[in-house]
Length: 241
Image 1 (cartoon, helix red, strand yellow):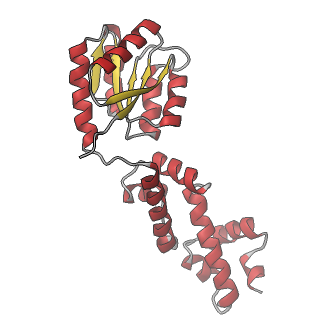
Image 2 (cartoon, rainbow, N blue to C red; image 1 turned 135 degrees about the vertical axis):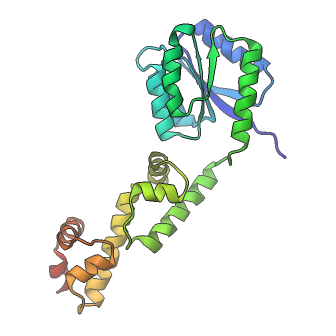
């Protein structure tokens, strides 16, 4: 079994506390490596977007964007990132609010070495149960999503249903799909439907426009006509002539 190092981002506005936390992580000899540090929530969110760490350790009270907002954004768009709160007594109520975003660990400042080691041990156990998705794995996942859409585009497909099919949050699936294809899943589905509609209109002139729309996933003929004209500059009936 190969050794795994989990990338970590630290968000803390006080320099001494932040550097001390980084030092304690290094001294803990656990499988965590600090790959970025931020002094406020907005900077931390940009770091998370860029490096997509397995772990985020954040304070609650920070300038520009506070820890709660940061946690909410990370949970929404990067649900696989584990989160630890490191804050003070006065912030415990905020920490309790963060629990709804699947935050399971809270460290009290000043952070003690043993407390940090115990929490990191728990997080490592949690992360070890999840598959590590590397860049090539994400690309393969997107290819599987594309294949699924090619086979099911004629059905009613919502982003939520699609995300559930592949065990992702809808926000995360949209993000990786857009990154690897250059378009949103909804746009990809629409393109598949319009291309198939064009084929049917040209090669099955016996089919009513309403039937063509239904066969490519548009039950409402007026909506189908509008979408088709937006994509081609022509109505389905004109295209069929």
